[in-house]
Image (cartoon, rainbow, N blue to C red; front, side):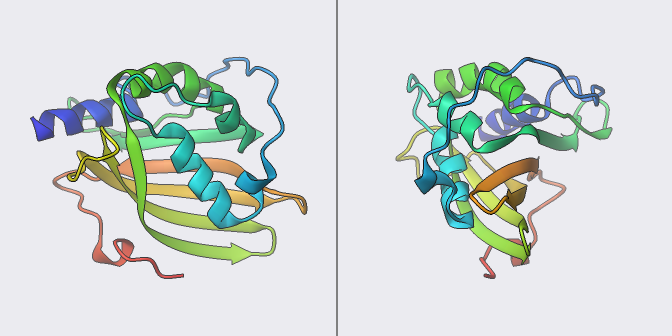
Length: 186
């Protein structure tokens, strides 16, 4: 059952049609201003992203808060190997695509993504954050059904931090997370 849940989630997050590699064009609604507490530091924006997508089954997410964390041209990019074809590919989503496609499933089934470890490289106004995560269906679950690495590209415009991209890959039996990414380094 754990393996089936894992495969379902991999297919959900990477998209069952891995051949699609062009950006989609869902029009985004007007974005509300971000809560300054969500975007005043790297720690704050990382916590806000994980917090806003997480919740038990039946719990609505604050998608306006989610949208406020991203630059208007941001991308969410799941990548992985299609289990049917063996082809490794990436899929490009806007924040609105993510809300439309993944939101209903996250709210229906429950999904809690928690940061396990973090590696940050920062230069000036840009930061690259390798964030190792583990995922649970319920807040009080003890065993994750999935792990992986989110690669965040962040930018500070002098006023706040923005998510530019989140590029991620789930762990698979043949592609285990290296030990160095299971402990924070900064």
